[in-house]
Image (cartoon, rainbow, N blue to C red):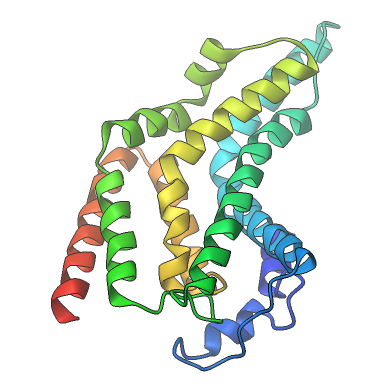
Amino acid sequence: MSWLWVALGAGMDMSAVEMTRMPLDMVMTPAVWTAGYAALMVSMWFAMMVAMMLPSATPMLLIFARVSRRERAAKRPWVSTGIFASGYLAAWACFSAWAVAMQWRLEESGQLSAMMVTTTTWLGAAILITAGLWQITPIKHACLRQCRSPVSFLATHWRVGRGGAFRMGLTHGAYCLGCCWILMALLFFGGVMNLWWVGGLAACVLLEKTLPMGHWLAYAIGGVLVVWGVCLVASG
């Protein structure tokens, strides 16, 4: 449902399909930032985060659901998987608010076009290189290990009750955020509503978390991004 909503434009006047087909340098009238428009942007970003990040959290959600079913069958206290998922998505809701604040600042300074793409070579290169370097940092891989080991995470962070489930989801979302936040920032480079870019980043996140050699894929992606950024600076 989130992917469909994003494809339809997530409440905007133009669908993501139409925006994807447009050239990145197409001249469009800049948006007028009001409280209503900011709220629309937050909802758009959040819908994208649900579409992009929830699939990669599926192993964790399925294991949590299995544990909950066993607790229910044994007539012990249990909580809905939806509460855990709500905590997870709460972390990405916070990121969505941050992304909108960055979008507003970049548009106001003329560094982001009405197509929601960077307008300067140096900013695009900076995003690429920063994302690439983050991919090889110990913090990134510490967070990635938590995302790749759902059984270990639940064993370490288990809390009882609805509040405990929400807190576990929020903690897992925080690890996921630490792992992938800069990859989501790459949307400013490739186009916030470019479906090819959105889908490609979602696939990278999913493969990093689920492939047996996903941590090596993270290093490889980091190397490609750094080289790409350096080449962009050299060509500019």
